[in-house]
Length: 164
Image 1: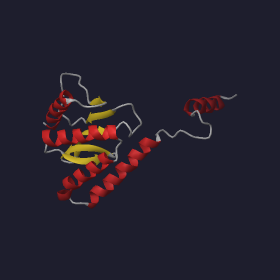
Image 2: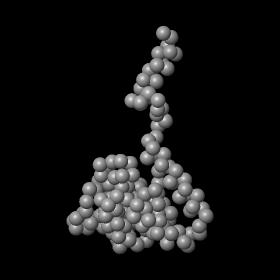
Image 3: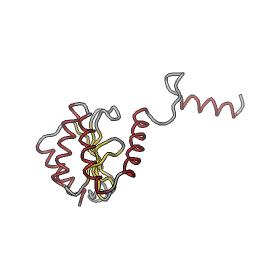
Image 4: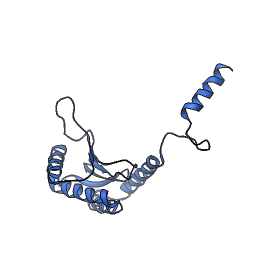
């Protein structure tokens, strides 16, 4: 066996999937779906004016939340309300098909339902624009399985800091 044949065989065995008839191209179906949703969002944002973006964003985010399974929907609705009351200057928008909240068009935080990528828990995430800096290390995402009053208060404080 030549070196070229060994390299090809090695590459094939490490990149293959359990199913012989499927090829792995680097992205899951859920990731490809999110990228397609993002492309649609970008296309739609170029068609509408900036005046209507905030109103349309709220409608789109509420519609996306309504599509979620009940457990995620309940959390997402509370997150949406907390963001609107804690940082009213953040504009709701869709980001990769997820509810997100932006300042000057740039995402500060987002909610990812557990169902979106078939994960065990929903996530409240923050971009690098969020002002959550705390020393040399701090969390940029939080796992959510349900919300209680203490969680909601903590999230409200995080949102206020992030929007800072």
